[in-house]
Length: 183
Ligand code: S3P
Image (cartoon, rainbow, N blue to C red; front, side, top):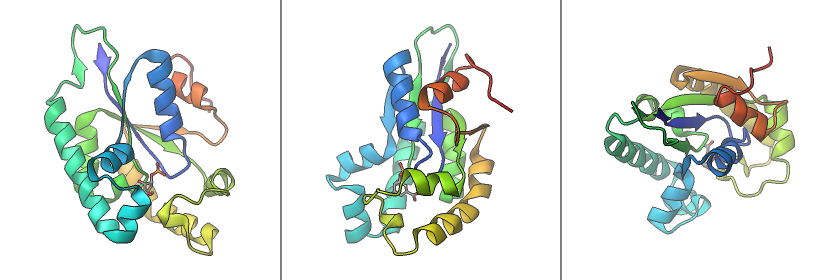
């Protein structure tokens, strides 16, 4: 049976790495919403935020999910097919709109890679790419964004995996049910 999985979670939670692992090692087709928006607009995410603003980026996310949902047209669990499905890696803020949270769940099983703020700060301490983390007090920003978003991740999620102490390959195997999650 082929399946679609949708990865959601805060910046630095490992959505991209886990998705790449599943694609490379298990043959899932990989789709990354940030990369698809960059390709479609010909701009980096940073440039979209700077030139067009965050709302324009959010509009692009909603338009992309709407298209993906129409394309998948209920194929997310194709009976009788042995082919692996698609992994959709998303941007950390894709859950901000209620409309997006509903669309994500129509596209596939939504997996929330949950991470603690301390781990985000550690993992992204050298990151200069993410527009939302470029201000001076990064710790405050991470904590604020996370507090705001946590209920939205939970609302969108079909499954929650705590990833602070996991590796991408272990997380991937947990997603596929090959390894049990630690309590
Ligand atoms: C964002 C996360 C980024 C990217 C954009 C906005 C966010 O993706 O979509 O910078 O609002 O959390 P990652 O989660 O892959 O860093």
